[in-house]
Amino acid sequence: MLSRRALLGGIAGGSGLVAGCLGTEEIAHCSSEGLGSGSEHLRRVAPIEGDEQVALGVLVSEEAAAGGAGRAVRVRNTDGDLVASIPLSDNRDMSDLDPEDYSIFTSEEGELYAVPLGRPPVHGEYTVALIAPDGEERATVRLRFNCYAADGTLP
Image 1 (spheres, rainbow, N blue to C red):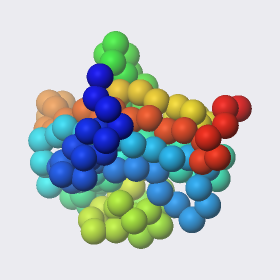
Image 2 (spheres, rainbow, N blue to C red):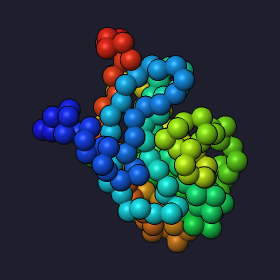
Image 3 (spheres, one colour):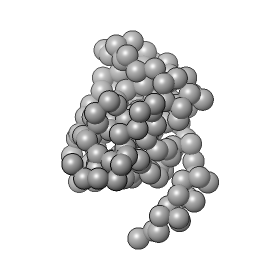
């Protein structure tokens, strides 16, 4: 098992798919590590916080959201069970999430979706796949994360 220092060092030097929970009022402290394909259409995956719970933020390109580069985003847990399926063109422009509100996503443009994960503490490992219009996986990201209550207490 990696030490906290080794994990944080890996996060700082890792790919653009790693992040922590961000927001104006912290409900959680998160650390995460991601491995992905570097796809221009599956732009970034990171845990983000809402007012009461942590969510898995998934940012896709405008082309993917319009259905030209993607049909859906599928999120699976470590057992391979489907956790969420987001039909992209059917949900286009329905997300009220603005990437500008989450600094980890501000350097990227696209449409941001969120899959609720629960109140902190919450942790897990998920595989996020962008499904192409032909039904094949176009890009995948594997994300591991730990999110703890901001004040360090358990619920």
